[in-house]
Structure formats: structure tokens, C-alpha cells
Length: 293
Ligand SMILES: Nc1nc2c(ncn2[C@@H]2O[C@H](COP(=O)(O)OP(=O)(O)OP(=O)(O)O)[C@@H](O)[C@H]2O)c(=O)[nH]1
Ligand SMILES: [Mg+2]
Image (cartoon, rainbow, N blue to C red):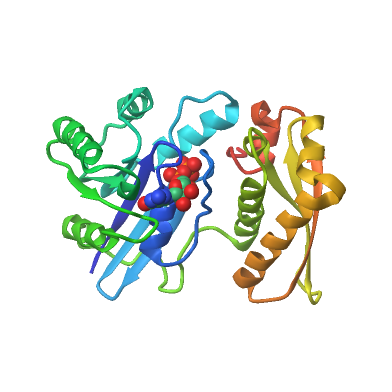
């Protein structure tokens, strides 16, 4: 059997989580059109009779403006340890720039490298070729693959190429396990994903989700969760006129949570202010963005 660990890194919003979900043919990592959606390392396990690949989706590497961003970058860097291959995802529709240089300075690993030029549906051939030239020059040994993660285009090719470089090894996870994240984490992420979808501007970055209460024995399952914002002025934006926004978030989230749990759910959402939480160590720990010890 071949097996190994493969980290997926890149700048925010390039399509890392979309790629992981396509590889697994299952949604394990939330996706949104807003940058900095993923905030934790999320494992997704690809199973085949003769192969097991433990992929790690990571927060997009960026120049941090808050302590939360620093922790997110740290997680992405930590994912580079003890891997068998690395996937670097880049957005074909964006020119190579300072953000890419920032990322590449931080990443220096000695494992097979796969560079995914993603979102080629949004770029011209000339733009794609320009990026290919830049990356070929920087990483002559890397395998460059053009992709449309959203449609699954060339995802099979990527998997086949990765398998070629994996060592012989054991299965690290049971066949049924597709992610290392528990249900509570996944529920909080679903709520955050819907909030990202419904809310605009800067508010999405200011949001965290906290699980207040779950009654597993009730039917439907009773869930109370809080959307945390960092300023009083954001509270009204999340609630919306007559509670419109929070109702929308709640109803979209409830549907996905029901598919996750295969049970009916009663979801009640609250909005709470935790002043400047993205810069407060205690809150970062409480919301799961920093190790408690
Ligand atoms: N057109 C197009 N859009 C894509 C493609 N892949 C991903 N997207 C979109 O790009 C946006 C960002 O996708 P994500 O998967 O959340 O990106 P990410 O790299 O995980 O972002 P962070 O978690 O913020 O670092 C979403 O709106 C996706 O639907 C693609 O191949 N083509
Ligand atoms: Mg992501």
C-alpha cells in the first residue's frame, strides 16, 4: 500500500478548500468567495484499496493584520512538517505579485512539489503560460498542473501524479474516516460559511462561531450557537432588518447541519460582541484558533 501526508498551501481564496473537497468528492472544508475563509488546518483523507492520502487544507498565507492572522499563517507553516509531498495552489486569474513572493519566502521544503494553476477558466492562455514560466523558473523540478478545481478538471491527474511519488506505508486512518474534524467543529464551520455568504464587506473577517449548547437527546436535536463579532456596530449588521440576515444564515446552516448529522435539527442563533477578539489571546484560544496550552 502507498500512503502519505500532503499539505495544500497557497494564498487566500485561490481554491485550496475547493480542491480538497473535489479530491474527496465530499465537503469537508468550507468554501466562500471571501479571502481567509479557512482558519484551521483540516485533514481530508483520500481512500482507495491500495492508497491512502492524508491531505491537509490550510489557511491562506497572507501578511497578517491581527493576531488571528498570525495564528492562521502559523498553522499553514506547521502543516509543512513531516509531509511526503506539497501542493501549492495559485490563482491563474491573478498576476504574480508581492503576496506570492511573501508566501514563497516562507516555504522551503524538500519534498515533491505540485503547483496547481487553478481557476484557468478565468484566465487567458497567455496569462496561464506566463504563470507557468514564472513557476518553472523558480521550481524547475516541480510538476505544474492546470486545474479548474470548481469543476474537478485535472483533479484526477493530480491524484495520479501524487501517488507516483508516495512511499510504501500503512493506512493511517480507518476507511470510514474522511476528516479529523469532529461534528461540533463542522457545525460551527457551516454556520460561519453561511454568515460569510450572507454578510458583506469587512464583517465576515470579524466573525467567529461559538457553540453554546447541544441537546443530542432531543428530537429535533436542539442547537444553540453564537455568532461572535468584534464591534457593537457589527451586531445589527449580522441581525439585519427585522432579523432578516440572521434568519437567512440560520436556515441555510440548519439544512447543511441536518445533512451532516442525518437528523432533524432546531438551530437557534445569537449574536454576541467580544471586543477586538481577533487580537485577544484568550478569545483566540476559546474560539479554537490557538492552542490552549
Ligand atoms: N471560477 C473558478 N472559481 C473557483 C475555482 N476554484 C475555486 N473557485 C472559487 O474561488 C473562491 C475561493 O475558494 P476557496 O476554496 O474557499 O479558496 P481557499 O484557497 O480555500 O481560500 P482561503 O480558505 O480563504 O485561503 C470560491 O468562491 C470558489 O468557488 C475554479 O477553478 N474556478
Ligand atoms: Mg480555504
